[in-house]
Every structure is written in structure tokens, then in C-alpha cells.
Length: 403
Ligand SMILES: Nc1nc2c(c(=O)[nH]1)N[C@H]1C(S)=C(S)[C@@H](COP(=O)(O)OP(=O)(O)OC[C@H]3O[C@@H](n4cnc5c(N)ncnc54)[C@H](O)[C@@H]3O)O[C@H]1N2
Ligand code: MOO
Image (cartoon, rainbow, N blue to C red; front, side, top):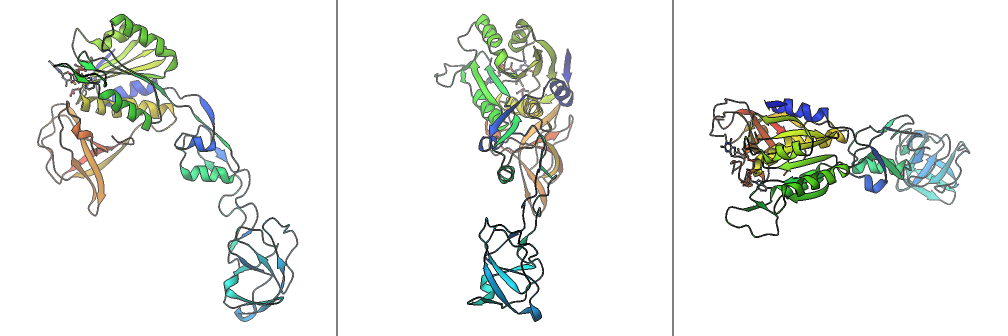
């Protein structure tokens, strides 16, 4: 077992055991915000035929001197056969998105023409190819429509619909169980006695897990449960889940509830203790190839631990790049404390005319929830850093799933 390691070493341990999930096929609309598990290649051109971009007239050739009169040879409806080439001196009426005759030189919008019985005169200069949507100008046969492991956006859904894909194959959602193990934590619907607090970390993680594409299969507190009941619950839920997150009970040297529970159910401890603040009391284990991740109980420690250790696992399991982006930002208000261990300070990052700025949010004690509001970045301060002066550069992790 590794002890008191760096967050990068802990992430590596977790990623070593974050298996890519199996696939499922979903109707197109249900696939929004899911991760494609296959590359999709265009089997035809888009558009498949040359089409008109306007309601107007397809011309056989360039108008003489920029203006000319054509013989108007009827109208092509959107689904009419267009294999008949347009004849010299002719114009054919066409519709937006509809087919155009073979060998059309350009299409002129009807408001740039004057028609008189079977004659049509072009009133403005146009150029070759004007208002023609060329075959494959959007996507050509063989182009990549969706890369494997892409987050399916509204643009993807639109493109897949244009290609007639009613269903999409995606990675299934990671299934997660959350257990709050802290002795003084009670469920949300209970009135806490003196010394007790409500489980606020469970819902925090539940919401983050859903943002990161997971499903919360079960959320429990240890309140009122015997050790044996907790053990039975953990073992019974195991075959329904991919990851178990255990909150709290991670610290005490001899009475470490989280580690004891993991060991009692037969999990192999991968590491315990990570050299960071907040959230140093954190560890992970493996049971039947499932990860059990233990996070510190203090709310901000639990939140930081989720971003550093749980979110990367969920991303990796769905085929996404596990790591959040590291960026350099100007710290607009500074941070007054020097650091002992490496510290992850909650911040709000945004761009303005001076570049990327980050503001240290109020309420930085690990026991407080306040710093999670508006937090979209973790400021990564190295161990032994002096206080951060306002206006200096800091390194930030740009969070994918904000609080
Ligand atoms: N002598 C020492 N005492 C403590 C140390 C230390 O190094 N030496 N570290 C402190 C730090 S930092 C933390 S973090 C906690 C870690 O404790 P645990 O992970 O064992 O967590 P618990 O004791 O179970 O809980 C701590 C605290 O967190 C709150 N909590 C826990 N679960 C929840 C929940 N589901 N929702 C909301 N809040 C929760 C609660 O206030 C607990 O009292 O140890 C310190 N002590
Ligand atoms: O895990 Mo504690 O800060 O280190 O809250």
C-alpha cells in the first residue's frame, strides 16, 4: 500500500483501475451529452445532390453583359428528377433546398429577376456557382462525422439526424454508490442533535456525479446502521456499481472507519493519504476490480477530492481524457496564507481584457461550504509557497463539472 503520496500518484493508481465501460445503443435524442463509443464516418455526401440555396431560377449559362433574357422552362419541385440537363438559353424555376437541373451555371433569386409569361430577365450581375449548394460541400463521403469518445453535442445530433442515424452507440453511464461514514452525520430529513450535522456531502457528490455522466445507484449514511449492516450493504451493492465513494471516517490512525470497512469487505488498499490540503485524509481500494474511493469528510475537502480523484475516474470510464485543463491565471485578489502542503484553493476564473483572471473565493476553511459557490477552478499552490500577492500568476485547474 502506498502512503502519503502526491495527487498525481493517487490519480495514476485510480486511472490504472478505471476500466472503459461497455456500450449501449440509444435513440438519437437520448444520446445528447453522452459519449460516443464509436467513430462514425459519412457514407454519402451532404448534400447528396446539388441543390438550390434560394427560391429562384437555375440558369443554363452566364447572362450576356450581365443581363439577359431566358426562356422559362417550368419549375422543378424539390423531389423532381434532375437528370435532364438544362438547355442553352433556358431558365428553370427552383426552390430553396430543392434539386437543380444538371449543368446549371448558377441560380438567381426570383427578386433579382423580372418574369413576363415564359420569359425571365436577370436584373443583377451574378457569378458562376452563385446560390448552388454543391454535392458534399458540408460533408463529403468518408469524412468523420463523430470521433470515438466525443461528448455528443446538439451539433452532433443534428449531423447524425441529417445522415439518418436513428440510434447512436455510446458508453454506458458509470454506476456509483455513495456512503457517508462519518459518525456524526445524519440523513437530510433528520433534525441533528447537538454534535451532529446533516449529510450535505452526499447530495454535493450526487449532483457532481450526474454532471460527470454518472448515475447514483444508492446514497446512504451510516447513521443507525451497525458495522455488519454497512458491510452487507457494501457487498450487496457491489455488482450494480462501477465505483463506490465513501465520505468521511478517513482520518483516525487506529479507528479509520473507511479503511476498516474496505478491508473487512476484502478490498485491497491501493493508497492512503495524499499530500494536499484540504483532503489529505483520502485513499482508494479495489474489490473485484471495482474502485472504492475514500474522501475526507470536511465539505471542501470532499469537494476537492471529488475533482481530483473521482471525476477523472468517471471521465476515463466513459472514454474521455481524465485530466482537467491546467491554465495560468492572474490572481486578482491574492491569498494571505503560506502553504505547508500543496494547497487547492477554490477560485472563480474568467477572462477579461487582461486575460485569464482568478479570484480566491470567500470561506476557504475545509469545514465550510461557502467557497464552492461560483467555483469553477482550483488554484494549485505548491507546498511551501509564500502568500499569493494580488496580480501574480497562479496555476489553475479548470473544472469540467463546476459546483
Ligand atoms: N488530530 C487531527 N485531527 C484531525 C486531522 C488531523 O490531521 N489531525 N485532520 C482534520 C481534517 S483536515 C479532516 S478533513 C478530518 C478528516 O476526518 P475524516 O475524513 O475522518 O472525516 P470525519 O471525521 O468523518 O468528518 C470530519 C467532519 O466532516 C464533516 N462531514 C463528514 N461527513 C460529512 C457529510 N456527509 N456531509 C457533511 N459534512 C460531513 C463533519 O463536520 C465531520 O465532523 O479530520 C480532522 N481532524
Ligand atoms: O481533509 Mo481536511 O482539510 O484536510 O478537510
